[in-house]
Image 1 (cartoon, rainbow, N blue to C red):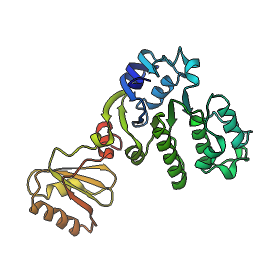
Image 2 (cartoon, rainbow, N blue to C red):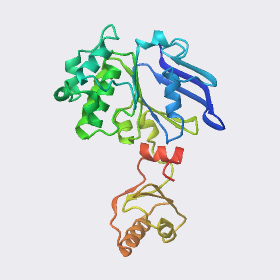
Image 3 (cartoon, rainbow, N blue to C red):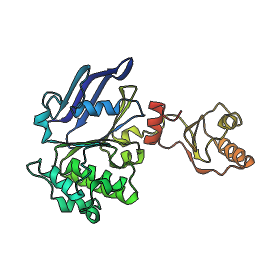
Image 4 (spheres, helix red, strand yellow):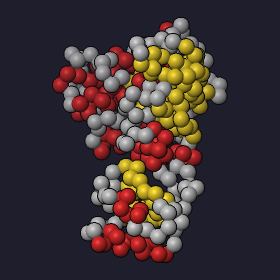
Length: 306
């Protein structure tokens, strides 16, 4: 397969006067589980559709398993699994029959019954697709994408709408597939999922790559001294910063999670707790310095949630 299962260079795509991809560069190491993160409108869906061969780029290049996904779509079909959020399942087929039909398209598919069991679908194996719940259809779509033992799987929001058990089953199967050498490129809005599962993370915003690395590399140690704490959302943190000794900046990267940047001393910690007490605010997880989470890195780079 080579060093990279997916290689994208300078990818461009416009829809009328809107730029979806603005010179995107992207790689997916072979054998990795790589997560593509970005806010709505960042270009994730367009990127995946180009890589799957469903859409043509206006410029740049894309290689999937060393081939052009548009010209070589037929040759790639037996080596690539695709999970779609909408469509791809026949509503009148029984769940197990849908999976068997998909399995017959491949030379060496996974056994159908164990795959149904692994995803908790054995009880609805004879139920028609149209009568499955949303979570059951989601798990079946995932099974269809991986039943052919693909070398590379494109997984669009594989755990969207799943309950805790369904999510755990999907995660466990993903980890098994990775151990078997399957490369996966998935999109998700769950940063916890990305942090737990991913070997590599790619963050895109405004059609360009803005960060790449392992979850640990992206959750870097803070270069600036400061404090962080958790409390109810929407605090007047500008007032808090003004009440502290010295020069401070304050932010709320995500609801209820606060960062204060400045020079920390015992008087500052005491001032923070005093201010919160005076305003009836219960503070949790008060930390000095520490590491920036993947979520904080994501919010900083993309501006999501602002």
